[in-house]
Amino acid sequence: MPSQLWPYITPGIPDELFEHLPGIPLSQREVRLLLIAQLRLTSDSVLWDIGAGTGTIPVEVGLLCPKGQIIAIERDEEVANLIKRNCERFEVKNVEVIEGSAPECLHDLKVAPHRVCIEGGRPIQDILQAAWHYLPPSGRVVATAANLESLYAISQSFSLLRARNIEVVQSAVNRLETRGFSQTFTAVDPIFILSGEKLD
Image (cartoon, rainbow, N blue to C red; front, side, top):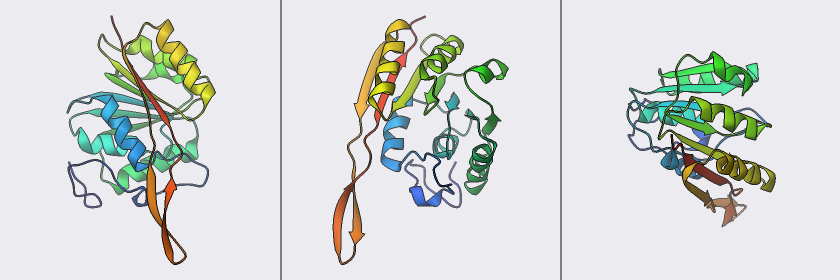
C-alpha cells in the first residue's frame, strides 16, 4: 500500500527520502530493485532481512506486500532504531525489527521465512547455512556481496547446501550528477546479487 511519502505502487524509492546515518549501509535504489526482483515475492510472503542496515529493503517490501510480514534483523541498537524510524516515515506497519546478532538470534524468531535476504554479516557462511535450515521447500535466499571474499563464501555455501536455480547478477549502474557547471555520469559501486532455492 502506498504511503504519503511514496504514493506509488512501484518500488524504487529515491535514496534521499530515507533517513540515514554516516557509515551505515544503504542499498541504493537501482541495486535494491535488482535485489527485490530476485526475491520473487508474493503478497503474503514472510521475509527475513538479515543485516537490514538503513531499512530500505524492509520498507520497500513492506509497501509491496501489505499482507506479508518482514523481520528486519540488525545487531546495533542505533541502527535498529533507524530502521524503525524509516518504517514510520513511510507508514509501514508490517515490519518487525529484531535487535540481535545472526545467526545466534535466528532460533528466537517466531515466524519461519519464505524468503531470506542477507545484506551483511561477517560470518556470512554461518548465517546462510543457519537461515537455510528454517526455509520451506522452494524457499529462496538472496544475498549480496560487495567483495571477492563474500562472493566466494556465498557461492561455496550454495554449493554445500545443494541450492537449485542459482542466479548471479552484478549491478553496473551510472547516475547523472551535476558537478560544477557540467553533468557527468558517476558509477555506483558494483554489487553481486546471488540467489538460490531450497530443493527439499
